[in-house]
Image (tube, rainbow, N blue to C red; front, side, top):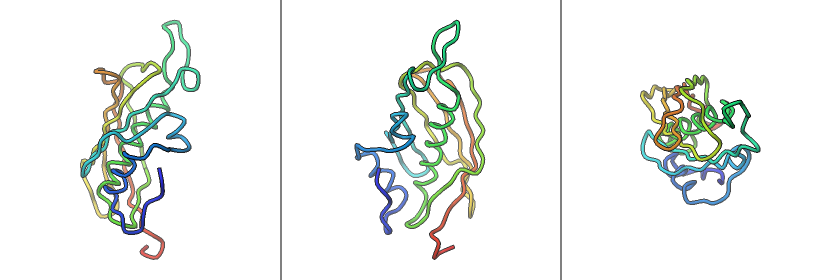
Length: 151
């Protein structure tokens, strides 16, 4: 994932990220990538491993809840970013996650969508799935950020 271009809209940036192979930081650690995006929505796929992100219980391995929160947060932030203009960005101001059932290590997806856009915030929702099973739901308030010279 590379930095946004000054004249690139948020949707253009997210769609460019879909074609890039490199990622960094937490995105690389969780094997996250944007797999679909349109105005006001984005889907993130992740491949968390048992060795790095799992916990053991008497029922076997399961993912730490922070993994699901991170993937949902990324999907909602990406969805909000698709509605940004050049020079605008986003930052999560509030995040709430409801864990519905344990997720096993391995592939999962989060689909985020913007439910409402105000002047300076987005209200977003996400559904986190593993295969056909919904393992969590999330909501967020995402703040709109402007370039320093525009603030």
